[in-house]
Every structure is written in C-alpha cells, then in structure tokens.
Length: 168
Image 1 (tube, rainbow, N blue to C red):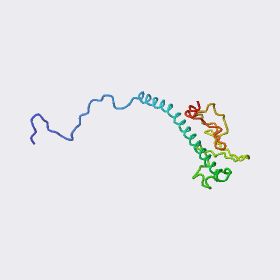
Image 2: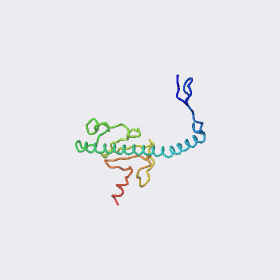
Image 3: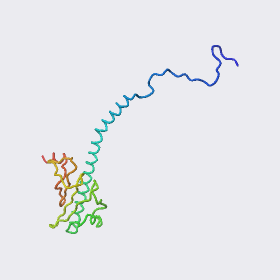
Image 4: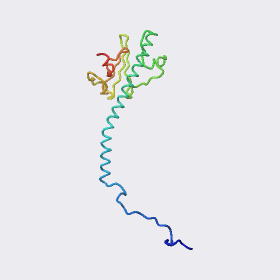
C-alpha cells in the first residue's frame, strides 16, 4: 500500500493523544469541606424561615376555617334561631359543604354551645396545648397561642398590619 509522503504506516489500533495532567481531575478535600460549609450555612438560614412560613400558613388556614364556621353558624341562627350543637351538624344541615374535625395542626376543634345561647370555637395553635397568652399587639407570630372565636367575633387572634393601619 502506498502512503503519501511524510506519513507513517499505522500499525495496530489508533492511539489517542492525552494531554499532560493539569491537576484538574477532581476536587480537593479542602474544596469539598468549604462547599459543604457554605451549603450548611445556607440550610441553617433557610430551614427556620421555611418552618415559620409553614406555621403562618397553618394559622391562616385555621382562621379561615373558623370564619367559615362563624358564617355557617350565623346562617343557621337566622334559619333556626339557634347555633349548631356540634360542628358536624353544620355539614349535615348543608350550611358547610365539608369541614375537617381538626385545625390545620391536626388538633381537634374545641367547639361548645354556651348556656347563654352563644358558641365558642377554639384552636390550640401550633403547640397543641392551652395557652400561652399572645403578645400585644399580636401581628403574625408566634403561632403557639390559642385562636378563640365567640359568636362570630375573634376574641384572640393575630391582627394583620393592614387592619391595624386602617384603625389609626
């Protein structure tokens, strides 16, 4: 076989030329430790905020559920001149389409019809226990204090910034 001038006859499989090692074949232990440290710091900053956002969402859902009960109970009072003896009666009688037996934190509602004919509905908050007293003013957090609704009026619940500004 004839080859063009200046080329050599190839024998065996083609060999690929590897460049000389430049030291960039992986990360050093120090680099890995630095990266893990930065990721740890980021996680330490983000996780508490995520937990707070979850509690804030649960508190808002619980307040919305309590308002739904208040509206349904008001409608029932107009129709029957009495409040529902149990939350399940509001669903059974068609005043609520559906309603959970517990608040957003999974704690059963404390619903009672009072002797004076009124009612009260309470959620124990994120700590799932009675108390503590909320701060004054209670704007958003903490999420441990109980939420209390009596006869369609919140006796203990956080106040939003907008409502507070409108009152001034």
